[in-house]
Length: 164
Image 1 (cartoon, rainbow, N blue to C red):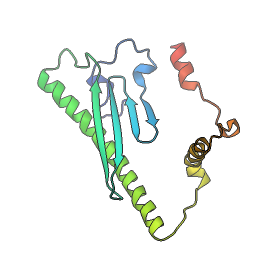
Image 2: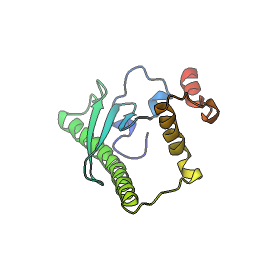
Image 3: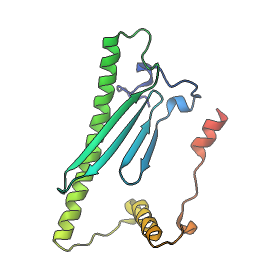
Image 4: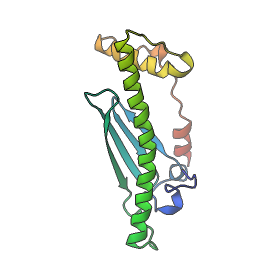
């Protein structure tokens, strides 16, 4: 989480009761179809994206929540506000990049539809998308999850947290 930016750990107090592994980790969750939750040791932010009726235009709602007590004791209200505004600007910049990718995908899908084109999956890059889309289709048709195509759960991070 320390990269020389506004989210670096020295800028804020952390959530209480974090072990050493958790205190230096960021967690990223994607909830189908349009919600992202990011948890830093000092803050949480959510991003919800909403398509519009216009291809290539996406609305978003971003919320930044700071840990209780995130403000350093030596920081004045003005300094804390400046730090949180810089953190929010950083998060907005990252999310704006994601929204551009979403909007370009929408435009590409619309263009393919308009020209009756069908894209191909590239196994190296698109396996997880292909697998996920097939999981959705299977669910819609009442079929159960095919365990043979489900990757083995990697417990490395959970093991490190448990042993800390």
